[in-house]
Image 1 (spheres, helix red, strand yellow):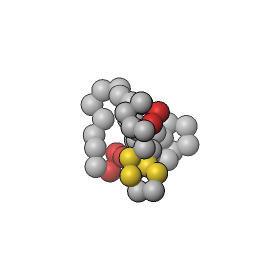
Image 2 (image 1 turned 30 degrees about the horizontal axis):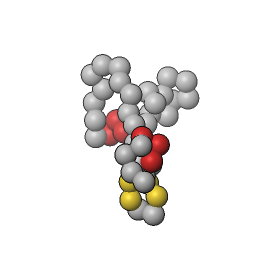
Image 3 (image 1 turned 90 degrees about the vertical axis):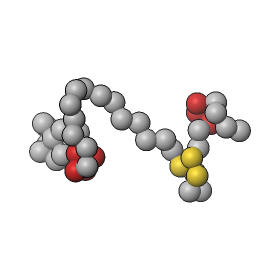
Image 4 (image 1 turned 120 degrees about the horizontal axis):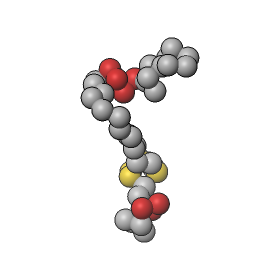
Length: 43
């Protein structure tokens, strides 16, 4: 993500600034809507 191995920096850094180590999670979409079945939050 930071480009240490291949020199390619993640596009997330174009509008965010890392301050400390963190994990980012993007929820999956199905048919244009959030699919939260893996979390047990929807049917």
